[in-house]
Image (cartoon, rainbow, N blue to C red; front, side, top):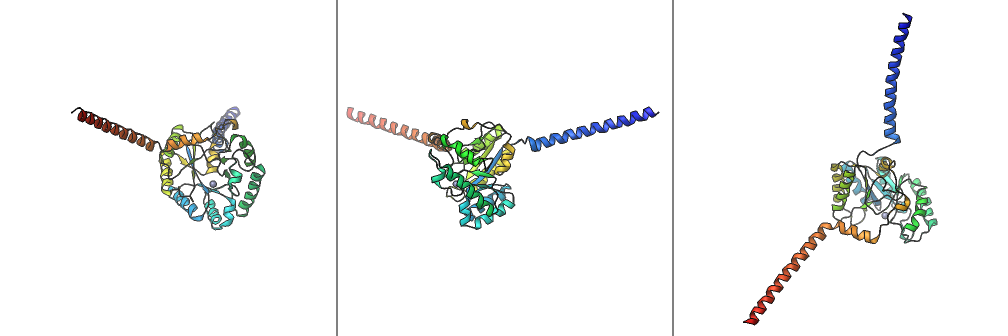
Length: 320
Ligand SMILES: [Zn+2]
């Protein structure tokens, strides 16, 4: 009797333990999936608007983001913020609503950031120290860095990455197209510029590529204060990405999803040459180039036919 009772109690205990271990196992799996090995089940699109040059420009981008129900990233130049208190005021409000701020340096001066092969690393270091002090004073919290101009020559990148990497885990270039696992360097993430004078063909193609790759990150660069910015174009692209199944996230939220990817070696980062730019430009305007090419062929053909007919008529006249 006593033995039977003991056996029943033991069997119950084992069932409970088995149930507990199953639940604990599921909990551990859930924890690992969400926190330790975050994976992006869907392609990601990020919008980074550069310069935060004035309140009207950033408010236009914010309005597009609100209409599309997304959060974006504003890359702010610290010294510009000091000149116009309305901009940091708006940015604080946007940050509180879940949008992100990125540091876009202290001065954005071409003499410092357009290296052309030589670099004053002390000046870059000062840019970082002073811009951080301004952001802190203005109660803004940049989580990522956006290089002014970007596109650094191979010889100077390492030094720049060393400085920026001490402040931010991720930084964005102003060139490139799609970011894929194994083909991305965290301190030189590719960005694709969306400009009014380019067709949306290339941007849509990148989003299509991201959707078919499943794991991909397309970072879109806009300059809301420049004449080549179009709010309608930005909205069209965001909606296109959303309809294609991409998730639109601000920069550091997106980084949290992709940071577990295998990363490219610094030595393997490609150079973005002028030739590459021409090729890209040609690709941007592919429909125009094809249309223009066909028109030239048709016109040349018509001119040749007219010339031959004219020559034949003259010969006939001469023979008479
Ligand atoms: Zn800029």
